[in-house]
Length: 446
Image (tube, rainbow, N blue to C red):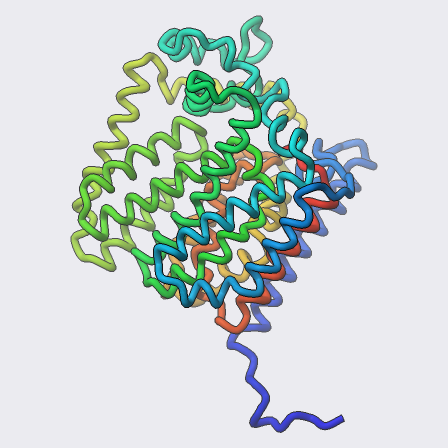
């Protein structure tokens, strides 16, 4: 067998070995978390997650979404990088959104229509259980905090009590429009979650370069966390906050006051969807800093974003819901449930293993390159990592972070341009493989 002349052999991309090491460490973390959970179970100290580090059940299966999921994965891995480089910008964003929509829906349908989409948010702990009882919205907002703590006759269900009233209001509004039930709610979460495939590339384009935004598009469209976007309310949260970041970036870079105002409204609205989304301020700070570097003085437009955020806070407060009171009560409610039995010493690092699955192995590689490069789209993924670390150390995210951290995890992929172009298809294949294997081997709760 003849060896190719050395002159004809393509050199390996710089940092390729270090990238493999980073991915291997991420994989080892997942394996260690799974083994440790098993050992803890045998010792009588369970992690309280049947498929730790994920909150799921072992159930190998296929479903009606399997062929479409495989087809989308093959198409993106084969043609994604090429189309991302060649399509005009707006058609690329449209293609990215449609791809993310199909990817998320197909993964959900692996579990079937009822189990994977229509029934996900109709279980007793979920939001839809409380929707019929909301007949007076102002009264509900005034009395919301009084029903947060458990063991009361009128305590809110788990997910309603664990969040501000924003999410419940969204689903009540959907019901009042005649779009009631789990099917419409599930489709809303999928449609909103797919907006991340537009918002992230657009933000990167505005703050860094169009080339960097194009590199990110296929990775966000084929996001492994789409497993939990379809269907969980956190998919909705991810879409809302990502859109807010994109509007803010546009407002700052283009000096557009209306866009900055909308960005502030959406980001503050996110904080009334989930208490933990106040940590989006870390990503917001990265956006403001990057915008100022790209367009000196861009930060001045941020006053409009602040005004938008203030309007949201003022509206909810005037309606009778005090965010700080709600947060204080939720920290107590959190430890009235299963969280009191989940060991912090395990979950403080096993959470990161769950994140590795949701964000995919490429996230570890991007973070490694962002730390080393300090150029290009490095700031957004590091800001997302910092927000995640803060959430992890808080002790209020023990398990289930594969869905809870979706609004942050998607920004880890904003640094895809840091990957050598020749390796991107390989990483896309790895991302798709993780999602397909997990979704077909485990029955996820969301």
